[in-house]
Image (cartoon, rainbow, N blue to C red; front, side, top):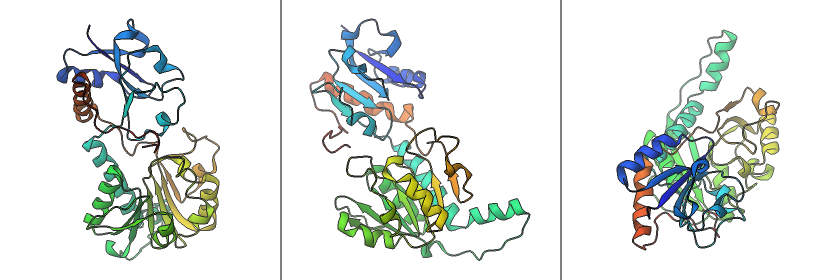
Length: 311
């Protein structure tokens, strides 16, 4: 009996995934969730935010692939089938996409582009003396695959870069901090703070009013991780008071961000609709195909998620 992969996402186009996997595994059946006629044949699930009870339909499921870098929405579910591997996508193009967004955001802030945009709206020639990038301190919270590449890219451009993670990390281009005890020192040296932490029980609400106040007054904030890591009300208050001078926000506690939310109306905020990075089927499918081959050979998958840790 041929094995099958089921696909479910309300935001991702399945056809590029179908084509990419067909080129790598011609014997694999690829079926949309609504078109499954033989649930017992389904061994693999490629999903983004499936409805509750989705996995119970497939008694022989062996692997769940999260269609994105973040797996928080999966690992916190209470309807995951026991013993089924959960994998995150390890996509080099997705990492580069994230790094390019972070670089865009940090360069825009370091080169005072928001001030020039505001001056343009006023019809005003507003000169600000450019500063070399090494005088701007960029702090990256979260030094996983995405965060580390983004931090290295900022360092390559000339920024002075520091990074923070829960466990110790090391990189010659970055001054690394780790652990909660080091967080005040880390935040106190950030002119631009970039959040790339995974969403876990330990990071939800980590950037609250007290920690936002540890940043130098007028510092900028970039969030490309998860909205729940930041106390959104505290962030609004910090933006209103000038404690945070500018923010670039790609993620929010509620998505889409409600139309009446005060963040929409703040001139010192740039909002993008969760587009900083996305999985690209042509570059991500080889990893999925390799894990399917490994499972067929009774080998453990790569890039498995530790459900207890949340990532």
